Amino acid sequence: MPPPRAARRRPAAGPRHLHPGAWWLWALGLGAAATRTTNPLVLLLLAAVAGYVVAARRGDAPWSRSYGAFLRLGLLVLGIRLVFAVLLGSPIAGTHVLFTLPEVPLPTWAQGVRIGGRVTAEGLLAALYDGLRLATLLVCVGAANALASPTRLLRTLPGALYEAGVAVVVAMTFAPNLVADVRRLRAARRLRGRADRGIAAVLSVGLPVLEGALERSVALAAAMDTRGFGRTAAVPRRLAVLTTVLTLTGLLGVCLAAYGLLTAGGGGWAVPVLVIGLAAAFAGLLLGGRRSVRTRYRPDPWALPEWLTAGSGIAVAVSTAWLASLDPLAFAPTVVPPTAPVLPVAAAAAVLLGLVPAFAAPPPPATTDTTVTPHATDTPATPAAPATAAPPAPTDPTEPRRTS
Image (tube, one colour):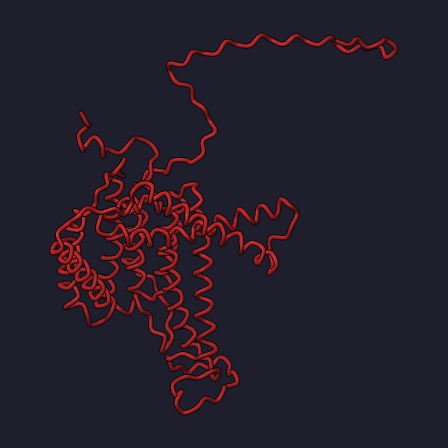
């Protein structure tokens, strides 16, 4: 007889992979909190929390090493935002002029756009805050990519999102695998005594990396086709249409509600639209699951560590949004006139709730284990006979040596 459902979903003792949905809910909660503030101290604290959790619970899989690439991408985005603010100006009018660049004259139809001109401290400060917020969002997404396995995330998708889930997972897998391929090829060049930096090295590494990505995509598609992924059962046409309408309507409602929650005046209508959108999307996904004809092999359990991880991310997002509505100036310091940002104690306590997965989540299992533990039923090996000692070397240099 098959084991009961509770026994099948009971998490194993010891190291195990946390449910990828819990990691993504935690990371999205931190990202939602980052969108509610431009305070650089709060944003840096969010990035530090994400980095500490990644350092504490990151495995040794190749896709787990992509966090550094997202950090560098965030710094690049921040630098580009500052360069654009210097070259193209800023909509923030300031009085503290740092320097003046030669301004390029533009035609009358390009009014409102300028190249060069005055660069003010207020404009640079506003660009710094916006760029730091976007960089923090990239850090949160990079943390989810480094902690959650993309293949396990694909297994948890409902049946109505199988086709879209393939594209999403392949896109999410591209960045971590790209970083792993670049590391591998650079190490190979160093072992061969070749330079791994510079334009020539980048050009020589680029083609093998793209070729490896193409081969990996083809292998993934072939493996999924072999396992019957994406095959659906026959359902009535009315049910298929109703499923599509409910899913699209629900997702559209969620998008509109998210836009309303991120704006200043959309808090009144955004919450009801969010509830209706989530209900419609859930109903559509539930009906779409009837098309699935596959079974789940060893499904990932959702136990107490998953609840604590996902709940901590949601708690950070909700508490930060609530505190930002109570004290907007603390979460959005003014740049005209420039004011020194202050870290609110309540906001710091809310952000520190994101550290819960560093202690509540189980450590990930190692992919490579060099130690071999014998089974209890194994017969102990017979000790080998000691080797015959070689005759000692003669002490007299004139005495001939004996050979064995």
